Image (cartoon, rainbow, N blue to C red; front, side, top):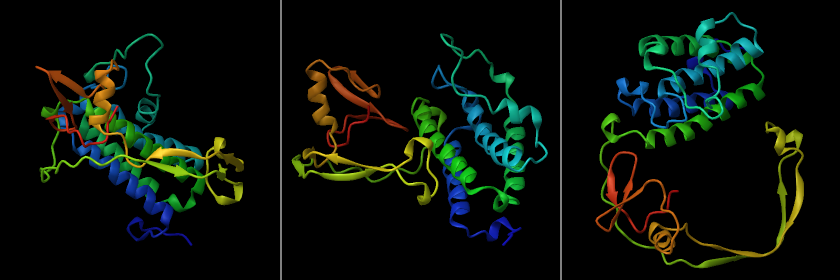
Length: 258
């Protein structure tokens, strides 16, 4: 069945792609528009690259690649397609003025989505899976980049109620020996090359903490000589943690983030 109206699409995989788009859109909306040309991590691109990269990747993979469609914007299909790593031993040397305007990039993104949404049902499912996985991967890595951007340049959501500090009582859970299937079989659907073929592995018995390691527990490790996580800061003997939107006295009951 061919569906021409993207709003009426109900195929689960297509809904998954639309959901992944919403997730990355929400992340970009956290940034003050003018700050999208900043580079919070020196070794990575300016954030504006990722704004165009996700749609360019989808277009180059699905539209131009799988369906051999006419290019949306040949120059930008290429500009936003290159990888995230600078030349070996160097830092990126581009300037903010080297990139298109936000108005132009948002227009490009809308055009790509409109064209792809009208033909998604013609694309191989494996290709759409790759587009989803790629977008969610960037949702994670872009979050790391955003963490390094000053809160002054982000739009913080409404404040949540203060966390009640309760430190869990840690204990070990014994896991009995057993066999587990690693990977997956070809007939199970989409998977990456290193996931095939599935095979059984015997796992000896072991014990694992019931709860994640807290900041308080990790602080003992730091006081014994280990390096502090990069989001921790110490001022006048007080430890602080740099969250996405503010700096807080180190909450001892939070899971540690390194």
